[in-house]
Image 1 (cartoon, one colour):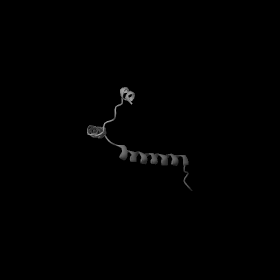
Image 2 (cartoon, helix red, strand yellow):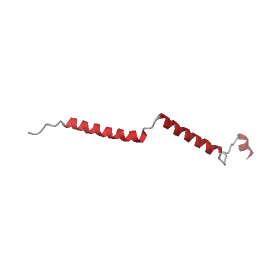
Image 3 (tube, helix red, strand yellow):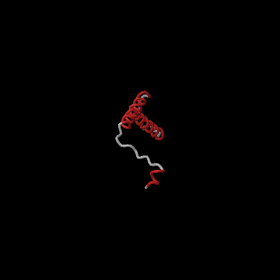
Image 4 (cartoon, rainbow, N blue to C red):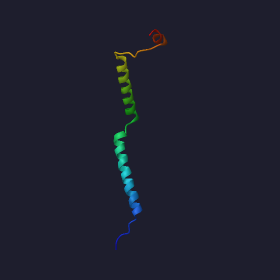
Length: 70
């Protein structure tokens, strides 16, 4: 005789395995420690500060007096 199979349980088991696989992939991609995240944020902040300090162009600052003289 054939074994009786509950399709609902098989469907749930398959969905759970897919969720576990997705979670494992996300742990690899996004699983970084708090220290690693802080290090990257600080490095980006230092890089931005370095580039801003050495910028050759300055933004024009317009005042009301400049607009009236034209």
